[in-house]
Image (cartoon, rainbow, N blue to C red):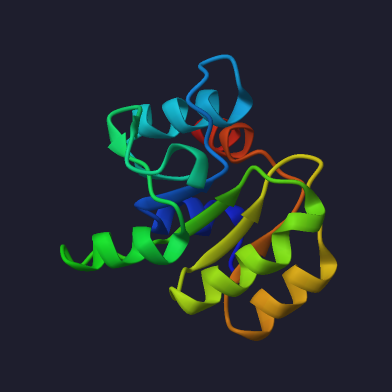
Length: 140
């Protein structure tokens, strides 16, 4: 498994599962930060599918997002999950199906079964870490 610093430095496109359109929500704050840091964010939230959040089209599923990005030859590097721990296994299966590079579970989100599944399929896995905090700490 690659280190967090390698995952973040090697990645360009981050699908944010559970991204909210409310600016006061952690998912929105983190996504805005990642955009400012130069990443392409891809919102995935069936409640807002077809809308835009932070200037990006929202997709209902990771598969829809991956299909849309594939036309430009762009893979999903990281699947960043803002969902409850028990909701992660189907997201892990979708991340595997779209050949994402990493399954990332935000602070307080852990699911060992999902992590094991993703690792067995060759994905890097990060659990219980905020991608914004990790990125910021690497910037010094």
